[in-house]
Length: 261
Length: 252
Image 1: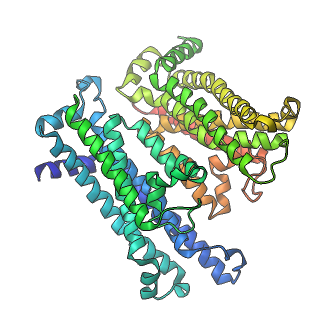
Image 2 (image 1 turned 120 degrees about the vertical axis):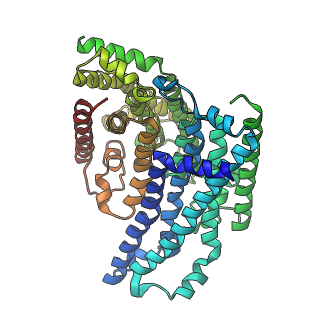
Image 3 (image 1 turned 45 degrees about the vertical axis):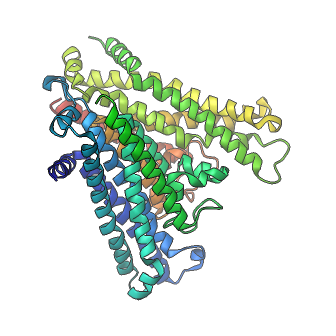
């Protein structure tokens, strides 16, 4: 329990955590508000010709699916901050040495970090995704469906799916950063992969095995009109991403427990 | 100390950073790998003409630019942010107390590395496309037509400029990771997302700069390529000025 509290306090004390939460807010709420306002404006002006291909659920979910960058940053910094060398005036040491002195059981330390990450990213998702949907409804005003219909239509599945996707993405980034002991490469790789220049998305379009990549598979939990053909079902997509997460966590834990800090 | 010496010192710092050579190698390799994918996709479409139009080949090659820009952004951030990883900046300022000169030296050193790197990346992408096209190859003469060369040059300039932007942001925030997160999120995520929503997104640095090399830009004709270059230039001038003022005025 002490370890959990310690890890939580370390995480919230990092300046990068604020940046990460800011990015999550801007991406999930900001983008959705802009998107939905535009749809409202079109509906209000009666100019609906350009909206034949618009899927409202998809529009609302664009924000949260890019908001995952915030939790990816969290997954990186919760590990990489331990390995950043201090300034040479302060001895040039790394925080991981202190952390392992305080919590010599490595499995326990890693489990605490992972647990704090799951709680924080899960909480962010569990709050922000429903808020995004409610805000979208508020903006749509008279054009929004009644609340019970929205819940039927969007469904707990999609909300749970996107929150699950955030948690898995955070844990996968976390595992890779544990292996790399450095934040830069995981950060570049995972941010790029979330964006329009996603290598995974390219592979999903070109090769049949691309659909088993973690983020491609995981996106099926909530995605409508995914931009590549022949994808897994939401349940299988979630399972595949979950398996990646568990597998990578296993590798990271084994390495972390065995190697020199 | 003269500006020449300051620049040489900065160049020697850049060349000894492990991250720099790794980034440059990764950028060029990434260009080769991705062109292979893009060419495969182009040839996969039904009704591929026996010989592709030269501009289509160049367009295929330049599709790697949004990916390869990550390399130049990393290079730009590294040039300045590496000074703040362990306060090397204090040593640098003790050796070159004129702050404006130190910053100018850094920028010249960045350009010295970035210009050849960008030209190599674009050149490699074009050569790799030609190789991968195989039987559908475009004759060299057609490939070197003025408008194609202009697009390639535009792509290389864009790469150099977006790295310069990252440089300015790095001076302002003094942290490598924060610079990367900010610039990559704006360039790779927010910019395309906003473009779907508002025409004003055309004025974002990445959108405006992309006009330098895209033959079919999707900005609804808000800006012409020349205006796009001007907008990106303005972003860089504003950010660099802010960076210079901050760097000269504040405590290191």
